[in-house]
Image 1: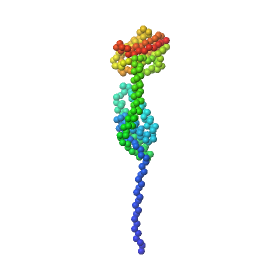
Image 2: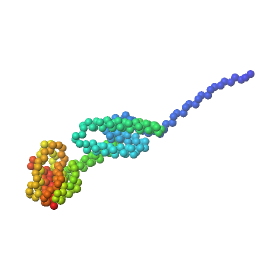
Image 3: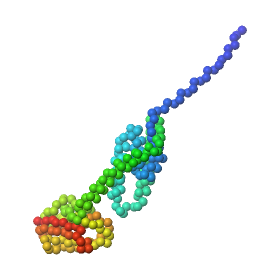
Image 4: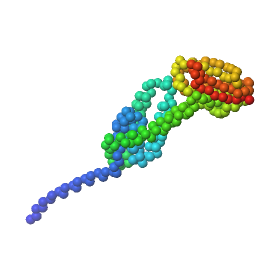
Length: 255
C-alpha cells in the first residue's frame, strides 16, 4: 500500500523592491519656467543653475550666470526707440527656455539612475535673490560710475582726433593745422527738447564761428567735428550757452 503524500506548493518569493538610486533635489520644469517669466532671467538661472550644480554641470551654471550679466547690460544699452513689447517677448522666451532646460535636467538625472526629489518652494527665495544681486550689481555699478563721470565732466569739453557718439579717441588739446578736431562738450545742466544752444568758437578774442543748435531729442553731450581741422594757428576757446548762461566750454591749441 502506497503512502499518501500531500504536496504543498512552495510560495514564490516576493520580488525584491527596486533599489532607488542616489537622491538629487531638482526644481521642476513648471516651477522654473513660471519663475523665469515672472521674476526674470536671474530667477531662471538661479533655479536651473542649482539643478546643473547638483548634477555636476557647474560650467553650464557659471556660463549662464555670466550670460545674465551680459543680457542685462545689453538691455540698459537699448535705444529709446527699441520696441516697447521687447520685454514681454523676452520674458516668454526665457520662460520657455528655462522650462525646457529643467525638463532635460530631470530626464538626464533619471537616465543616470538618480532619484529626483522636489525641494520646497520657499527654499528658492534665497538663490533667486542671490542671482538677482550677482546679475544686477555689476550693471548698477557701471551705471553709477557712468553717472559720476558725467557729473565730473559737467561744464567741460573734451578734445581729440576721432570718436563717435559721446566718445573721444586720440585725446589731446593740441592739434596741427588741418588736423581733424573732434569736440565733445558735457553740459552743466540737463537739456530738454526745444532748448536752443548758442555755440561760439573764439581764437583769442576774435569770433571765428558761431552757430545755434536746437535740441530735438535726448542729449547727454554736445559734439562738434572739424573734419578738415582749422587753417589758422592759435589758442581757441569753444563756448556753449543756453539762454545766455554758459553750460560748457573748453580750450585747445592749433599750431
